[in-house]
Image (cartoon, rainbow, N blue to C red; front, top):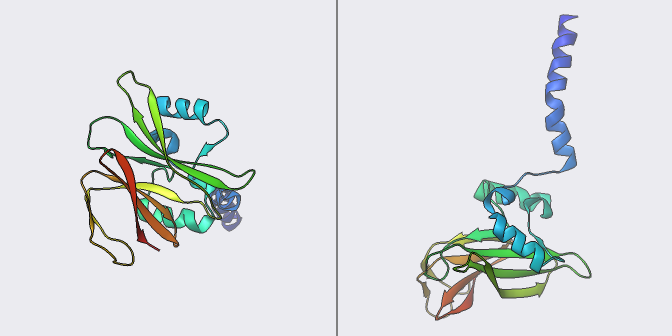
Length: 182
């Protein structure tokens, strides 16, 4: 009888773990790290698009994101991309219909507290990508052609996990790109 109660308690203690494993639901920090004003501006201006969340990725990409980044939001990169001060973000939005597509936006808060958006990239895709911030430094093309690029502010890194990585960096008031892996 005592053994049966012990086994029953162990099984009941494992149920929450089993339930989350079967639903595939994965928590992310997107709500916690996205300023409310930014979320509101995105919802009103890009109503047909949704910010990328960890749960939008295939399970193997979720596992790799968590292994490398731990927590965070795979659709939001916060950094100093222009060399000026203020809140700046790289935001990855996507939609499934009519065909899977994504766009990478640069979001910057102006002096009045409103967000301005600049589209850096728009493309149709087979797989979703993730974004994160990378510090200033030298970036080299994946094929090692040409001289390394010296980036003086943070870069937005967009990665299609296990497929390719591109750095987006600001120079002379415009975003430039360099493919840093394929």
